[in-house]
Image (tube, rainbow, N blue to C red; front, side, top):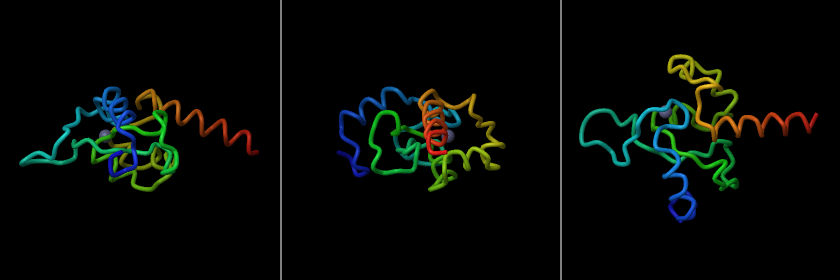
Length: 113
Ligand SMILES: [Zn+2]
């Protein structure tokens, strides 16, 4: 397990899948660059902000810029933010894993009402 409580097998799986940021699609760096911007450093992300959901569907890799912008915001709320508008992040531009998460949340909302 890494320090986010992600088992090594899952970590490998997600690393192999998410080569670019799942939100903005930027090519990510594994390590902090010696100089310049750290906004493209790869970070671990819970798509739905629930640390208990440690599945390939909820664990993803995104760039430091998206991660710090999203913070603890709800995925739907964040996607309405200025950051997403500026970076052209929309439901139809995000990675497949994020699209699926959005669908899942919608379904749950429907079932609750
Ligand atoms: Zn990003």
